[in-house]
Amino acid sequence: MKVRKNRKKTNHNGSTFDSFLDEHGIRQEIEAVAIKRVLAWQLTQAMQEQQKTKQSMAKQLRTSRSQLDRLLDPRNVSVTLDTIARAAKALGKRLIIRVADTRAKRA
Image 1 (cartoon, rainbow, N blue to C red):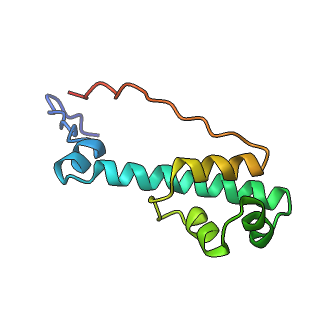
Image 2: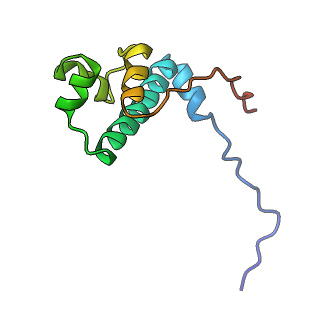
């Protein structure tokens, strides 16, 4: 059995995923899509739990079914906060938004 001495440790510290996104100038876009995916999923889940159809939801929001489809599309980030808040209210939910400090950059 060989015992290795004086073995160098390899430093595997590299850039973070956030720094990669910053480097390519796409961080805000990626974060917006991630947030919209979560919101769309939460609204869809609430509709399923309440057995609410897209047609009845659109009617309650006084909008078209295609507008509701845009709201529930996880890739469509051009939906207004007002629309999201109205949809949440129609499902007995409320929209909570906050501004938080960015995390300290990693060394």
